[in-house]
Image 1: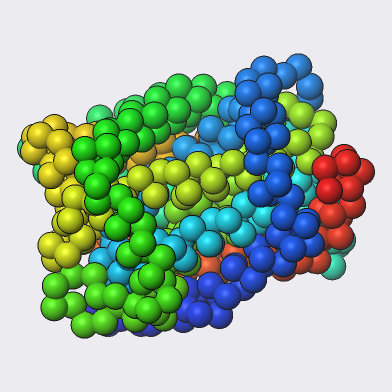
Image 2: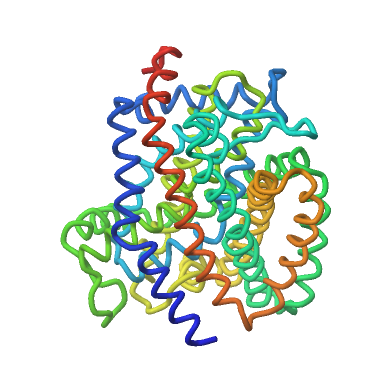
Length: 447
C-alpha cells in the first residue's frame, strides 16, 4: 500500500503541477480579458440578480439563488478553514495574494461554465433539468467530442467519493473528536443518517438544506472573524502589507521553515484558490443547470458570486485571522492552525468550538453538494436507473470516510488525480466554446 501511495503521490504532483495550474489560471485570465472584465464591472449587478433570484417561476428545478447555494455547499468546505491555513504555512503569506488573483480570474471561468450549462442543458427521463460540462461538450461541440464528455462524467462519478465524500466525512469526524471527544464511528453513523435523509429527497431537498445552512454558517463565521479583526485592528494593516510584499519577495511561513519562495507562494496560492472555489473543475455548472431561468447570462452572473464569496471573503477571513493573531509562525498547520488563531482571538474554548462546528457544517454541506455532482455524472454515463444505487453507495461511503482510515490516504490521492482529469475536458470546452459565451453576453447587453 505504501508503494502504491508513493506512485499515486507522484502522479498527483504531476497532475496538479505547474502545467495544470497554468491552464486553470490561463483559462480564467483569457476569459476575463475576452469578456472585457465583465465579472469585475458587473459585481454589484450580480448581487442584485442574486437578491431577485430567491424566487422564480421560469423553467427549471430550483431557484437561481438555491442553485448558487447548492454550488457553494459543495465548494465551501474544509478548504476554507484547513486548506487556507496549510497554504499559508507552506507558501507563506504571499500565497494569500495569489489565491486572491486566482479567484478574480476564476470568476470569469465560473461565469462561463454557468452560461454554457444553462444554454446546453437537457431534461432527463424523470423530468429533471440536467447539465454541466458533459452536456455542453456533447451539445455545443458536436458528436465527435462525445468521448470527452464521457471522460468528464466518468472521472466525476468516481472523484466525487474522494474530495466530496470521504475527505469531508473524515474532517467532520476529526473535528467532533478534537472538540467534543466524540467517537469516530458514532459520528459516522449520525452523519450517514443525516446525509441520507437529505440525499434521498433529491435536488430540491439538497437545495433547501443548502439554502438554509450555507448563508447562516457563512454569516456566523464571517461575524466571528470580523470580531477578531476588530480586536486586532492595529495588526491588520501590517498583515495586509506582509501578504502583498511576500507575494513578490517570498517569506518563510513557520519559524525555521526553509523556504517559502515566490514559486511556492504562487503554486500554493493558485492551488488553494482552485481547490477552494473549484473554478475550472466543471462541478458548479452541474448545480446551476438546474436553476429556474431562461437566461444563461443572468445565471452566469449569479454563479460567479460563488467564487467571490468563497475565496475573496471566506478564505480571506481565515487568512487574516491567522495573520493578525500572530500564530502563522507557530509551526501549526491545517485546521489546528486555524483553531489556534480563533482560540487566541476569542476565549480559548469558544475559539475551538467555532472552528470545529464551522468545519463540521461546511463539510456536511459539501457532502450534499458533491452527492448531486456525482449523481448527475453517473446518470450521464449509465442512465437514470443508477441513481438509487449511487445514493446508497454514497451514504455507505460517508460512514467509511468518518470511521475508517486504513485506505484514506490512497482514496485522497486518487481523488486529487481524478479531479485534475475532470478539469482537462472542461477547460478544453470553455476555450472551444468561448465565442458562444462572448456572443450570449453581447446579446444580453452586459458586455
